[in-house]
Image (cartoon, rainbow, N blue to C red):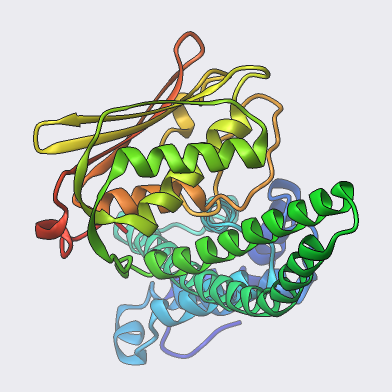
Amino acid sequence: MTEVGLSPSSQAMLALRDQVIEAWCQAARQTLCKAGELPDPILLNTLPTFYEHLARLLTDEYYQASGVDVAVIAQEHGGERARLSGYDTTTLIREYQLFRQVLFTMLHQCSVTLTHEQREAIASSIDSAIRESVTAFALIQSALREQFIAALTHDLRTPLSTVSVAAQVIESKAPSDDIRRLAERIVVNAQRIEAMTRDLLDCMVFEGGQRLPLHLEEFDLALLAYEVAQQTMERSAVQVQVEFESAVGHWCRASLQRALENLLGNAIKYRAAGTPVLVRVASRGHRVQLAVHNEGEAIPAEEMESIFQVYRRARRGKCSKDGWGVGLPYARRVAESHGGSIIVTSSAALGTTFLIDIPMDARPFSGAPVVN
């Protein structure tokens, strides 16, 4: 393949296009596990066009006049990878790195000599393509996830409401205690599913950089903690110990209640068998601390931050727990929306503690920025 006006380097690189792409396809299928399942057209995607762009990059006059934009090619590639493959961002980045490795190896083997500036231009263009592809990939995945969650929560609510109402009727007219207890369990679990759908909807909000809606009012956080602990014990039959002193301030009751429920659910899920969970409320001057502690396997140090990322959960040994990975991110956003923070400490000897530290009066901080 040759084109009039292209430099010898560009022509030599274009002549190797099919060989380089074939070598990359083989390497990708062998190296990237998720690439092995893709049909050839999907695996190739925009790679042939991208390759030709890189080749023309070696002809300054042609490239400057053509207006070829690597961003457009890379964005399309990232978007299609999000829609049509099982890739994650690591795999997307790795395939670009693999392409660069194969490209330079093949050019060397075929005695295509590039100047330092030409090699830098190609490497820089690939780096730019990685950035653009990852950005497009993340945007498309976020949009797809939001569409899925919105559809899921909408479709769940109608049958869930029907189940809950029916269970309440059965509970009120149950002819025996056994049936009444079963109906109570249905109602409780329907409420849990409703809470999970609310968590998912809230995660859609704050993952997009929006603030949680707070309805600030004056109440005693210690009494709220006690109520939530009692409700949790009734649902789970797990002992929850409460240590508290009165702490009256201005906060959003609903969001702090759900944050505490999430932390308690997490503590119960990962506690050592037969051990209680501890809830502690303590005033510290103009601030208050709400802590949830459990004994059990420690959170790995490398997972300390990822547990606060939406749809991620820490891996503790071989333990696999159910859940959607939205509870802890929600608790962090609640703390930040109140002008505070959440801190986690974890070790095998001392157990795991999640501590929400917020000001006694959150009204001055209700418009503060939060971390996306």
